[in-house]
Image (tube, rainbow, N blue to C red):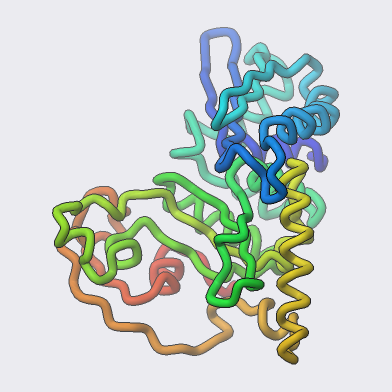
Length: 296
């Protein structure tokens, strides 16, 4: 294991697709463009193409072959093909197990035994293909910026990533679970005749300054993270708050009352994992605890 391999595994885990054939396997990784323009009104696609050059310098020596690159308005894809007998491909397939894509992949237990640098590289690879930071994603105060990591449909991958973040001492500010009690807590959408409104992606939210040790490899995301981290720190200091005390806090270290939510008719939906299906939740923290993200 090395940081380059860890970064590649993080990308595959975050937004990869594994197509196995009898003699070879194709690995494709999608890098979505949440917006066509950056926060500074530059074309995101140009930044992504520039970032791919940097990513290639990391991955191509590892895979020993050139990466294919295609780009559309809303996403870019890098891919490579290797024989199943190739050592690198055998290692990748060992880590991903039987998974076919990010929708059913898990973080292999061995990843938790990586060095800190390797864990950080894995998380950066994951974040480059799932994460973004925008000015509109602040929390109450306009300077309280957050990174969002989006995980579609894979409940267990959310807790895996949160536990890996915990291992490198990065707290999660909140998880917006795709659960009816979280996404439609007051039944507004249900009463509008939209009973499945809550079936969206899960969102892991992290304070911008806390995310700096992970960072992004994609240039426009990296620049936005640095800018918004500075704004967050300056904003807190301007009102006399200790930055580390305010943002460096795991959910089990705080108190707080939860607003009581009404029972949602979809609490038994099969979209919800069996171990929490049928449960009623007033807080994202209780879902996290029940699915395995918590204090060691």
